[in-house]
Image (cartoon, rainbow, N blue to C red; front, side):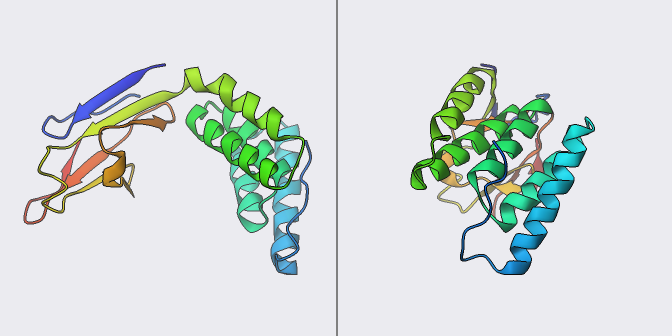
Length: 174
């Protein structure tokens, strides 16, 4: 497992089964849109266009969460080299499957377990006074909760932008 750590005081750029349908509570138009997105994703996947298929699987899952589409999304991410995203989706599929007493829970758990050693990690270590001062840390534009500071975060391979903003100070990117 590759681990990278940065302190915000130093500037660093880091290189760093089928769709099961929707829950009954989903509005009919969401279910129809989810099904359409899923069918588009499957067609793209069959044509070898995994990069284009992943957002369609994600759209389908967002509209109508189900074990099957979550597994397909995870597999799509894995096929495109997004190991951390794939791992998170396999874990989500496992959780959903266990909640629904779905036999695919063990498959999802095994796929996540297999990916774990391949995941890149990023550790962001702000100064000790950062939390008390109301500082904000973002990774790739998303706020990083202070509970995740100094922890090895699962990240997809590639470059990542870490920004640090402290009240009364200019934003700093790393």
